[in-house]
Length: 101
Image (cartoon, rainbow, N blue to C red):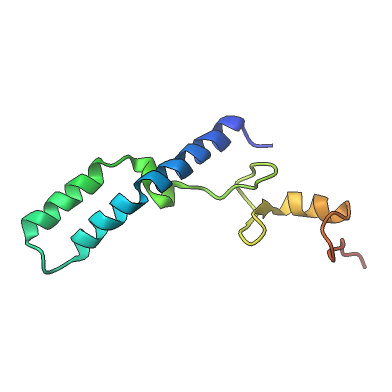
C-alpha cells in the first residue's frame, strides 16, 4: 500500500487539473497562434507560468485504484500488476486465470 499522503497529493493534482484545464487550453491556443502580436503571446506565456504547477496534466502520476502503487500500472484496468494478479488468483475477474505449466 502506498503512503496515503502521496495518494492524496495526486488527488489534489487531479482536481487542480480539472479546475484550470479550460484556462490552460485557452492560453496555449493564444501562444500557438502566429497571427497575434508578439507582446500578446508573451503576455499569455507569463499568465501560463503564473498558474499553479500542479495544474499541469503531466504532473499527475497514474496510480492503482486499489493499492495506490505507482509502478506496474495497467491503464486499461486502472490497477497495478500485483493487484490484478491477486484478483485473478482469487477468481474475482471473470475469464482470467493464473497461468501454470
